[in-house]
Length: 223
Image (spheres, helix red, strand yellow):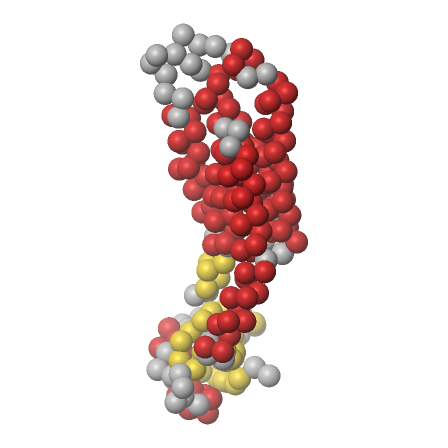
């Protein structure tokens, strides 16, 4: 037995729930947009509204003794993983986009809450997300800054086709490699390494160790 959504939920309520989802998802998306992230206002808004609509369809469009109203909504949790994976970008040894992927996952949950009419939870989650992405980020950075190692950039030039592996191995004896960028310029390859030196390590020791590697043409610290 199937019933249309109109018989269970009037269009004003449908409009209200989708509008709430759009407003809350858009608020988080705007924050990502202002920070120039890959997934911004439109993506977060669409994900939130889509999740709300799936929830409405799942709960109100199909009813009957053999129908599970949570079946469609449950697939949102796994389906949103595809969008989240697309937002994560690996650059060298660093990974970017994890926060944006998490916000996409969160706005899907907010959309489900709005679609189910659970407005309190949707608003509280949105407020918490904006607090986490804004003021809490600044507080966390200031609180942990004193415990972080200073990061410096080492520039190494090797012959074209040279592997960065020996350079990384040498640098890791003195510190932790934070990120790595490799670019090709004419007959040379430039390797830019952001490294956090250990407490007893010094810049001259790193330069001396890297300079001894076969194929290294030039090594210096970025000013």
